[in-house]
Length: 408
Image (cartoon, rainbow, N blue to C red):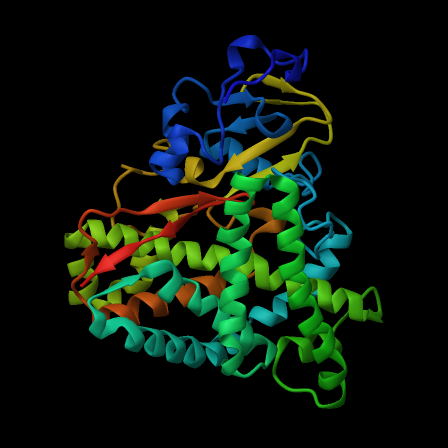
C-alpha cells in the first residue's frame, strides 16, 4: 500500500515513517502474532499512515506501560472507528465511569459461574467432534472453534442449545463474512452488514429482559437485572448494550485462540504428542499457546503530549498496541519464538493489562482448555490437510485464522 506524505503530521520524523498495514501487510499475512519481529530491533516505535495514521509500539515494556495508563491513552480508538456506532459498556468507557461498570460486571465471571458453564462447553465440544470424527477431516474454524463460544453465549443467556446454529451463523458473519465484504465491497458495506447482525443479537436480548424480569434464573440477563451502578438499576438499554458486547467481543477472540492453537499443534506433532500423553499439562500449555499467539492490536487515543522510547507524541495522535509484538519481545521472554508448553506462566498481554484487561479472559481460557482436552481425547493424530494451509483474515483489532483444514 502506498500512502501520501500529506497524511503524515509535521511532528512525525521522516525516518520513523514505515509503510505498515496491520491488517494485510506481508509481515502480518506470513504469521500475524510475530509481525513486530520485523521492526523491533530498528524501531521501538514507528509511525504508519495506514488507517488515518498511528504510532506502533513494538516492545513489551512500552506496550504494557500504555495499557496501564488510561489517562494518557484513553480507550476510544479503533482501526475503523465507527463500525458499530455504539459506545459499548465497559469497553469504550474511561475512569471514573469505567470503574463502576467493571466492578459490577466482575461477578459474572466468578469461579462459581465458570464452574457452572464448564459442563455446557464440554457437552458442545463432544457433540461437535462426534459430527466430524468419522469423516477423516474437518475445517477447524467453522466446525469447532466458533461453535464453543457461540454455544456458550446461548448458555450465558439461558437460551436453549437448539438456538446454537443461529449464533454460530452470526458469529461467522461478524468476523469472516464482514471482512470479505470489507475487502470486496468496502468498509461502508461491511459496517452495514455487521450492524444488521448485531441488531439480531440486540433484539434477542431485548426480548429476554421482560421474561427474565418476571422469571429470573441463573443467566446473565437475570444477573444484570439485579445489578446496578451509581445507586440505580441498569436500564434496559444498558443491559442490551452489555450483553451484545459480550457476544461479539467473546466469540471471535475465543474462536481465534482455539483456531491458532490447533493450527500450531497440527504443524508441530511433538507438542501435540506431549498434550496427548500428558493431558494434565493442558492448562499450562494453553497459557503458552495464548502467549505465543497474541493476535490483538489495540488502538488507543493519545490524550496529552508524551514521550515514548525517546519520541514525542502529540495530543490527538493514536497508538497501536500489538499484543503479539509484546509477547514475542526477547527482552521479556526467553526464546519468545519457541513454544515451550512447560513454560511457567508469566505476564503476557494477549488479554491486555490494567483496568481494561479482558473481563472475559477466564471464560475464554476455560473454553480453550476444554477444546483441547475433548478433541485430543478422541482425535490424537491430525495434520494440516495435504496441499492446503491455514488462512488468516483481519478484522476489528485482531487477525484470526479464517480456515484451518485438518485431516485425521
